[in-house]
Image (spheres, one colour):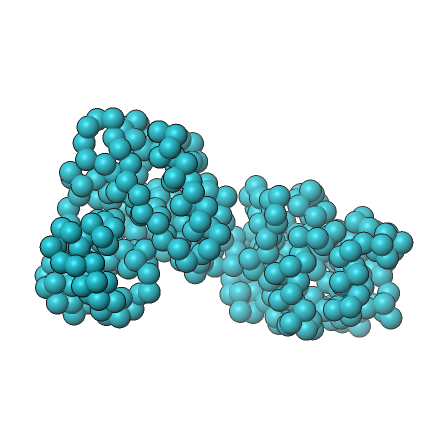
Amino acid sequence: MGSTGLDEPAIDDVIRSLYDAAMNESLWPAALKGLMEATGSQAATFWVLEASEHPRLPIFTSVNFDPEAIAEYLKDVAALDPTVQYLVRHPTERIVHDGLVITEREKARHPYYAWHDKRIETRFRLVGQMSPAPAMQAGVALHRTRQVGRFEPADVERFSRLYAHLEKALAIGFRLGSLGAMQQCATDLLDQNPAAIVLLDSHKRIVYSNRSAESLRAATDGICLSGNALLACRRDDDNQLQGLISSVLRDGSADGFMRVLRPSGKRPWSILVAAASHRFPALSLFRPAVCIVITDPDSQRRLPLQRLRSAFHLTDAEARLACILADGGELHAAAAELKITYGTARARLAAIFAKTETRRQGELVKVLLTTLT
């Protein structure tokens, strides 16, 4: 690493910064600056890539880039980036540089670089990545300007020594981040909850199901868990369920309700589909996007009114409405059950939102279930 001008103690500091950042994501800017100095780079990014037909970069930390250009890149351009496309196709390739991805002549004709040359000052890129799970990658990208020039073989060799520590740091970070996120989930949703609770990721795959939900695997009473998918047995019901899930994934804020008929003749399942919290560590394999609460009106135990009133300072009327909604009930049906007008139910719901510091019915249900069960 002599050509970087850093001595061995300084390189040791860079290595320590990688492990620190993997444990505390707020430290990535400092780690990236160290990597830039060690590799003669002018900018750098740390990212998590969700690989699919439409790849996403849900975590993206940058140093020495224009924030507006980065926002535009993430919103409209990243999927066109040849390097992103190459990484998606080669998730196990540890170190990637421009020469593997695209030639300078091809850059001149590529639509991504037409945008890049207008908005980004750097020209050359060197990437170190690892893939802890299918469809999940993470790494850093180092960038150089035209004036400094491309990453030569000697630069790649020097970076490979740092990469060995980067790979270990990311692997540790993913393990601890995922364990922490799963522990948070278990704390929030409480496995003993009588409602069946299922969390899906952005690809509609099950990433968590509580004990009540797991009991549906052996049942065929209208709803079932098959492999890593949640399905309704009847085609029309399943089309509606998958449509609600897609709507939540698309909009991020819309909650949906439906009921599913049961061949057993029991009262229909009540199903709430809502956006899950996106508060999880950057290095986490556990990334729930959709929360589904399935309740059985014939066996569901309603939340205790007194605890609701005490926990959130609700009135008796508000607590009764909150109990019905926590069962997955829809507001029109709740109004009918309580023998009040829909307008009155909406007014009470607004008061409940204010007292529970929530904004949507799905968010309210999750707060009630995780706080009082």
